[in-house]
Image 1: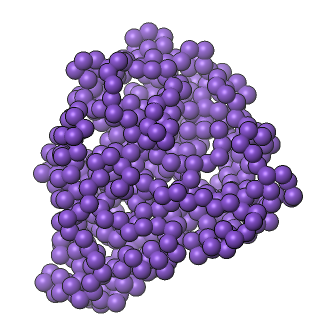
Image 2 (image 1 turned 180 degrees about the vertical axis):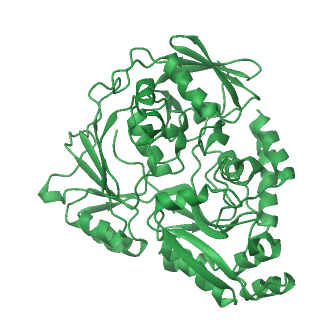
Image 3 (image 1 turned 60 degrees about the vertical axis):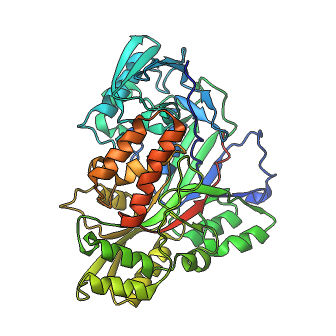
Length: 499
């Protein structure tokens, strides 16, 4: 087997963990049997089909239901799960995947090469909705070798395909469930993971129960209930009163008081996720580069981090986190300079009578609505009229996927968390022409053939040092042209304490 460079698996959740507040119960312990764990989250899922995912939180849910071929630990090492290993041909164009034997999907259907090939055929079918298909765009075909061996035939060598196989994107779905439900399998997920979907009451809760026929080590938590609570303050109140044991994304304003509570444990290690204001490059006033640059200079990112997010994030110096492989600081930084912003708008002959359309989700990211309101105020301070609309997450995702002639996105808040710790996930997934909606999630509609050539060359490069040099160029390109990212912050996160 050829040795490839490995990247860390993306962390799962930003969470607050309470220890011993729920009805006076004893503190949660790492290996103690837990009858039920209730986790408060701000948004509901739009789909539980792993191939249709756009949202990290729900990819985590899919991991629990479907399982993964591999698991990547924080040190970057791959551990076998539904696959026991892989071999790579000398030319890097054939990856032979060895599947675990004796596994069944939770509905009793056999897990084998036929089931895995069916899932891969769906992923590669251009008629299927697969927003993150770019991650496996180098795969041309999945071939069955025998009952427990498949081969992925690649269009070009791609070194980080191993870590990519740990993503929920490629998790297999039960063939029997696909035959029974068709595309409605998104509401009736059936996989080979440690949990089974028990109940999904839209807008209220999602309940998963332990899969007693799971092939691997049984989880210590018998039931997980994800309680949908859009308001931060309500989630925190439920945490303090013991109605939930984990609060996902609490209000940044209350972190200090929660840290002072002896019954609450706050965990905030830095995440790889970036939260940014996307600027549409092909529609609206933001098609003008000077307008995009002006909007960047108009916003005080440090003030937002300190005063809106209360220090729970860091200003970014480029479109990807410093934690990912291939990070490079932008040569041009957009420091807060409202006078320069006004001058750029003057040079662009900006029409101040026009109203800029700004969109934001509510409850998906830390203070997402409040951050958007702050950006709106900064733009209004330089004379720009801004209309801000707020949407629930499923509606917002539907809007992100609309093609250019239908999109209403001009300035919009979005987060992007690399699924593997490689700059390719962010740069290719946000700024190449092929990820422009509806094919992908590059909702800024940035499309630059020169940039595409660089990114495609970096994907084919097997030498990490050369790949780094390739990938450093597009970061400079994106910094000097402000393609789609404006005001950026880096969040904090914590792996969910469930085995």
